[in-house]
Amino acid sequence: MAKGKTGFVYFCNECGYESSKWMGQCPACKQWNTFVEEKADRKIVAKTGTKQYALGESEGKPVTLSEISLDNEERMIIGMPELDRVLGGGIVRGSLTLVGGDPGIGKSTLLLQVCKYLSDAGLEVLYISGEESLKQIKLRAMRIGDMNEHIKLLCETNLESIVQTVKRSKPEVVIIDSIQTMYSEIIDSTPGSVSQVREATGMLMRMAKENNVSTFIVGHVTKEGTVAGPRVLEHMVDTVLYFEGDRHASYRVLRGVKNRFGSTNEIGVFEMKSEGLVEVPNPSEYMLAGRPTSASGSVVSCAMEGTRPILLEIQALVSHSNFGFPRRQSTGSDTGRLNLLIAVLEKRLGLKISDYDAYVNITGGLKVTEPAVDLGIVLALISSFRNKEIEVNTVAFGEVGLSGEVRAVNAADSRVNEAKKLGFKRCILPYSNYEAIKDIKGIELIGIKSLQDAMDYV
Image 1 (cartoon, rainbow, N blue to C red):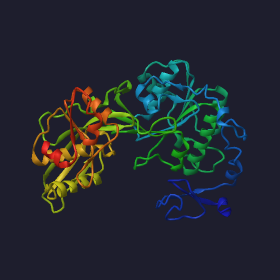
Image 2: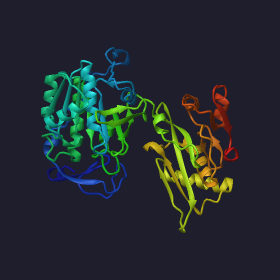
Image 3: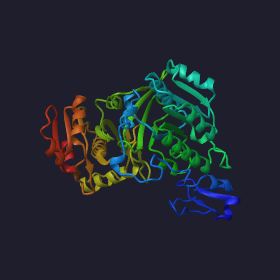
Image 4: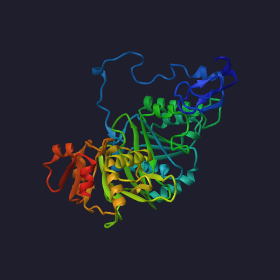
């Protein structure tokens, strides 16, 4: 292993595991064909010892919990409620946040708006770009609005120079755009390589913790939708935010997939306009905009995104197949789950859908993975198959089991209250949830125990 340091070493793109030779499968994360070759240098070992990587304020001396003061741990409120919610109530001082997303989806625009809000509140902000010139940044800033003197801009890719600039200027928030363009002189490889991204993130983490500077870093994503570079990048940072949605559409969804200071899977919905990203305070209203009022195969369900209930429309189309193997396609939900629900319908309700193509679409561009929308998908399939409309003011949610039973879901009261707030008159839900919240007034609750009960209602 030591001999390999003088020539080339191999890194796993997923977890950062290092090896002196190429291997088909990574022994650490068990992923296949993830090793890439990079040039190694002895000075890596000399400059990345344990002393340099030490973080914190205890200087190696253990302390008790009672000795740790939390008086200065207040959050910095950005002023964008959607983003503040995703972050868990604001920016924690000294935190390191990773923002990922497809090219052109609005990452740089969002962070420049964050700079504007924070600088308007009197906070010192340093925006560092390794991809754009100062003139390009100013053109985008003019589109967003007037900037004051509290925001400083810097075009730099050398990490050692960036760290010295931060220590000298002492900003409260630093934004790095992007991590793949940064390089350290102690690593003898090109910017964006596995070793450079790993070392850059480590240096920025030390800078954030030691100087109590809140740092945002932008990360490019691969074609699979994950941040390019080693998987250890996401493990090192405190918060990971992903921008979802089609860059050609006007709406964007910002999702928190990791947060050491708040709940995960919180989302914020934004609309891209000429003046930048504008918040959508009521996503349920947006998800249901343009919903047909008299069409079969359309059902409104409710999904929980973090602590927020969101009503969404589930559309299904069941049509006779002209091929020997019917098609199953799902947009916004898992296709494997769709196949499972169709099998339950055939086995438990006797619906012969095996000769029919089935398409399911969750409108609005939202991707839903929780099983609470199972009942909505099933009702939409039955409605399309029977060509029977479901009343437009009805909401349905619940998990469907393999025996055809409808199981309870969490936060049923929040889902029902969200439906009630938007004017829905009827809610179909699992019977066990109905027993717990049947006292809610202003909306009719229908508790069901099995899919047969749901089909009888349709």
